[in-house]
Length: 225
Length: 249
Picture 1 (cartoon, one colour):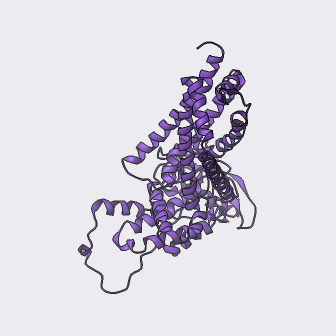
Picture 2 (cartoon, each protein chain N blue to C red):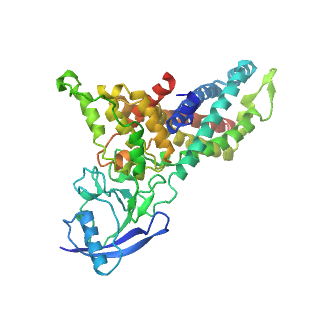
Picture 3 (cartoon, chains in turn brown, cyan):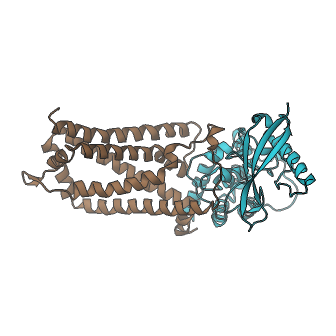
């Protein structure tokens, strides 16, 4: 079987969605780890961000990340359209089969993946505009990203928006992480239930980590910390 | 004590005709009647009144043939866990209830009449690879092919699939992954099915996609609706087989 043919099938598409989703999740971990350096103060944070963007490999990484992101979106949107057309007449009455058996993993998170995903994509655009392409302050010959972050998260509206956005991403990961494992064929009598729990723990950890930043920066800007 | 229930039933004269929900009253319903027996009584009244009876599929009426399949109040095969429509009894409902009855809905399962759908798509998926090829000849000795008990059990768990289509009906994407994966696992787990394992998964998945079923969102509603409680672990296994086949040749 040709790989091209396989990647267009329903299962091949889900495998690609899972792989790209996991790649984006790994990026999120790195992104969070880097951002948490904000807590270490302006010098450390600015130096870290300068080292990151002055490395020529960053362009390769950015192109790769963008490709992964677009593949994830393209495959998902195509899948949603196919799925919609698979049931042209809707049920007049609909209830979750979960109500008769707890074996279902259906949740609010699993039913809103396309909504939370779309929101995340839109958020990403504003996020890049705010920070990556935001005001260029300089301090000591390098970009003063610390000042920009301090400025942006001094506005309560921005803080609230970011907390909402992180909650949405948390929702997406709540179903997405363990779903990716299932798509990739991970099935084990002992490990599958643990993976389900691990996916949820990691989604809480990532969202929780990102929650710290706007709150901490806001409190710092108000002189509370 | 006899019950009276109101039924909202999907009526559709033919595949191309428009359908709608129509309301009927079922009187003298005994709690010990099965759901299908209740419909039989309603149909007898309709026939007596010179009206077209409600068309629905059923055969064995003991939960093993896979013929019956109604969406009762929004759930395929109704409210009972691990049960087919024919195993649902009227004691599950209360006097005065309104019950909505619809056919399994999927593009790949066109409505033939009322509550009867054409599940031929499943037959075509089976024909695409759900078999084991072997030459005719004397049957080998059963003990010549040792199969560990746990493997035989898992194959049997999957072989329980009666092809009713409740997995498709319950899935928000009308996907047939649970059915297809059950057949693939049932054959692929056993040494007789091993030889065609790669080819089987590729051909069956190709047919499944061609029939217009959706794709899997890993929610497991299929497993919850399945009268045989087949696990979505089989879907993971199918994905693994598919990945191996895709990377293999």
